[in-house]
Image (cartoon, rainbow, N blue to C red):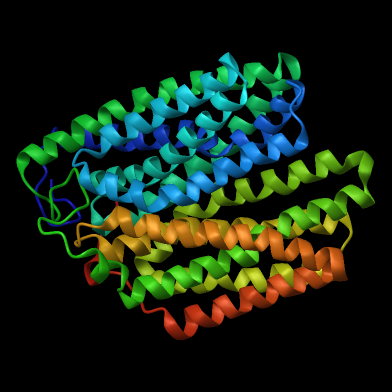
Length: 422
């Protein structure tokens, strides 16, 4: 069989590759909510354990700070490990350990340590999944594979939130974290066919620079040269501005909904969260196809153009039901940005030996954008009202769109448009 990178894969043949594809589907499904969903449930759980709001805020802040501080070192570590499946296993086991730490002893030392462990392993798992996706699909079909990843992650987020919420309601808040630990077990099983396939391909010889099981080149470029690449810097700025414009919109809208429709606020806010996830699951594979056929800039412009429109609509339409409908735009933007972020960075840094470091660098700028967004937008909302905050965020989104239009070059490899994921 000829791969999208132009090499012949005899590593177990087509059945092995298909098993690895299904393994990636399952991996994204089971780790999605475990990787991102601790925060709200942890806050509720610690409240039942007698923690004050200040103490809970400190615990959550420790997790946020640890995640931002871990981005670059975690990326460097993943670059250094040739077999990305081992990194994925370590990350998932760390999730298991952190969940159990919360349940066994919800005291500050264990909670803080669990938050740090969870944050660091989140920063290693994301790049590891990108590396495994690259090994299985090849660089030419990576856009389609990442679209498929996003679909299963979105389904996992929605299903996991429902299961964890039901567990907390019907059993106990502590049981949520036992459920989280259990959910990591099928994720570990899902890695097995992926690891077998990538190791066999590695034994057959390189398919991309550095071998099929990894996304590093045989010769690593200097860090300064990789992180100083103009394309990476421009994209990092675009990503930070996108996140700044996007992160605070839903929290501010949720606060407004709570004041206007207190009796149905929980249901409406849940709809605001679930609807974009459904849109992401629906269109992410199509987004990956567009990125391959029409280029990365086309998809970026599409996703970024949604932000200013969404901000203006939220400023103009304050009633709860229109706000829920506007969340469709959030799903479109999330699908485009979620697929493009790892794809564009792979385009730029795949053959430098520093791919995961580059992922960590952009991840850090995204974290900065999100942190500043909620703080600054909240201050503007308090001082001048929610419409002013939404218009500020819309203006930032429009500036990000202009930066993509004027400064971001096309990064799609020439051969990528001719490859289709088997």
